[in-house]
Image (cartoon, rainbow, N blue to C red):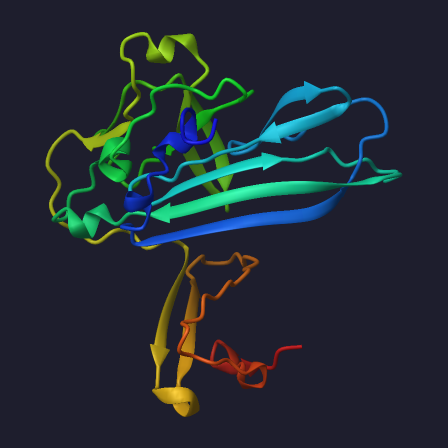
Length: 265
């Protein structure tokens, strides 16, 4: 379908490059081929089994993060077999985009698909077995009564993510009733009454990154990772994008945890 139909319609280059952050990735890895029969995949709000082609099971998943982020991922892979008699390849393409409307919109937290991408969803890709939009509508403090998402979602899904209960408004683009009232879908999130400008709540796991020093001798990249959870530890995978004018040396890597240096293995 390329950019003619489906979720890819939203991927307008000038809007993506105008965002606060964007990242594209292609993941390829070997997986075990299915020998006989089909097994179901575990249920997950961002990953669901969808279709069966011959003796292969193909899955697609896609997720949207509200307000300040948007993530699209299409995943096509073969279900693993415990015997692993043969090996195939899994291809997963992802696109992550972050929009900061709170800072650029004078403290307003309202957003919509059209406001982010200058486009709306007009049709689904005929080749897609599943095409869904997930909007995080989890209540924060007493904001539940103030939050309003439109149009009404086709369903609501609840899940536990990193120990926190999350609520998602789900828009099934393959549902016939979704496009009955309008020829396009413009998902919007609004607050029912004007909100005073306030700082956004800090996530439990967050990071800060800055470049220090100058030149090749004293230049450095510092990344601070914070975990404010009272008792739980989380695994972290750190991916650094290095500015073109910096040259990194692996032997200069320094890791400090709670004031103590941890020498990398």
